[in-house]
Image 1: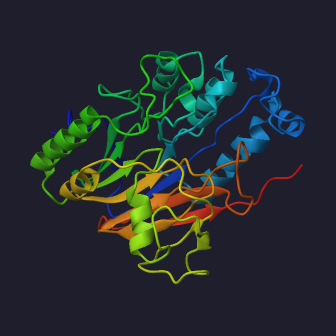
Image 2: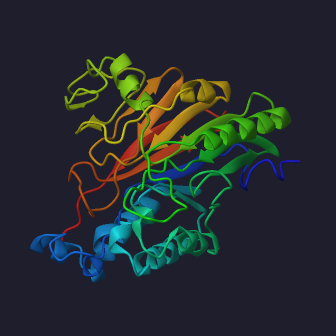
Length: 339
């Protein structure tokens, strides 16, 4: 039985594609909750005032949901900018808004969510008690480590591993790993969980992994594809425009990759357990999606106009998983809303 193998099960009708919407880095800011008077400039205080969540965030998400009609919404971190949500009001509004779609939605924490002095215990409770969230804190390092099993025709076809990449340095909460990267027990959890699933369902099961801060494989992917000369180079480019596209790759590198870090043995683990897609956020001006070593490495398109953004790189990312378990990825671009 699949019970006990995964934390959540999402069933898809026979011979129908699974439609997934990835949103990332909505990073809601309530300027009125700024801890320091000079933290924001005068224009930011106006643009990100308390009553701007619709204009800066919710309108974008509503439009994306309407355009993509998803079966599942994945949020790859930084739902809110926790430093500007010490009262917890932004997160409460956010989860109520997301639950209002009555569509399963699955968030992970980024490096800013847990800055709020409300604490991660409170944040997890708020999300877990909603009606439609697929969220579990998990029992290993971090606070958003869990699995979603995709079942079609009574067969477990795919598993989505949601993992906390940690790295929230602006907090004193002892339940937070302040340094960036997976802890050893998270990698053991992934390995052991995947092994149990494969013992049940066989090696035909495929996997997605979602986390917030990109690992070094994203830079290696772009370098091996010939889009840049070195992993740490600062060249900017649009795949298919400035450099020829390989393997249906796409997207723009608009800044140096933010937060890149090595995780020894990660690529080996991913290949061992049939991972074919990895989805992250964090780097607001990067949206490349590159096939490397049999895995598609995708930066989700930044959603909404809180914090840093490129007006030409706003939107979300649509993932279609076909009945044969292959998948397609594309960005859904949006115009900046104007009053």
